[in-house]
Amino acid sequence: MDFLEIAKSRQSCRAYDRSRPVEREKLLACLEAARLAPSACNAQPYHFTLVTGKQAEAVGNCTRSLGMNAFTESVPAFVVISEEPYNLTAGAGAKVKGQDYRSVDIGIAAAYFTAEATAQGLATCILGWFEEKKLQTLLHLRRPVRLVIAVGYAAPGNPLRAKKRKTMEELTTWK
Image (tube, rainbow, N blue to C red; front, top):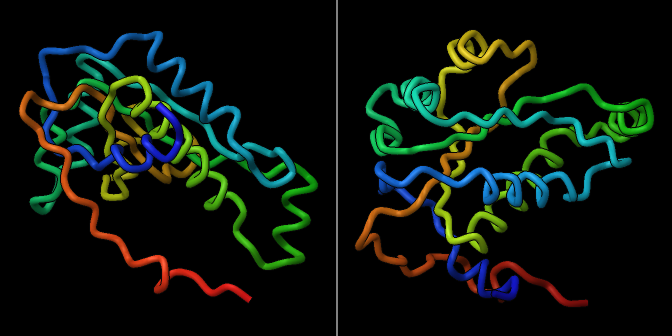
């Protein structure tokens, strides 16, 4: 599968097959892709906490409130991405430029993770809705939680939806 095929077939899955656990080797391949993602000054200002089994049920509970993310009840694995401090160079650059490189870097790492998950035949959904304090307590995290990625196999019959995106003309200017 080439990258454009991955981009076309990756979607935010909201129906998982609870009966199929995710193989450790596939999760490791996804983590390796995220580890190789570019980051400002190669700082990699993030940490991945992988959660499976009964602990995944508890993480799923932390993503469901006010009627959001009901589908996470059937997710067999989660990756919780927490923020780490900048290295000296990236921290100085962030201060001088007024740019939050950590958020950008975390987004890039999450994109690499989910792209590799698609290549591995897995389904994902990047979640920004979660109860941070509960996750920190549950997983013994000292740093801010920035994203949670649901990972698993799509439920049988879960169709690939048509992508609704802006046109190339709306997104691009050539000079």
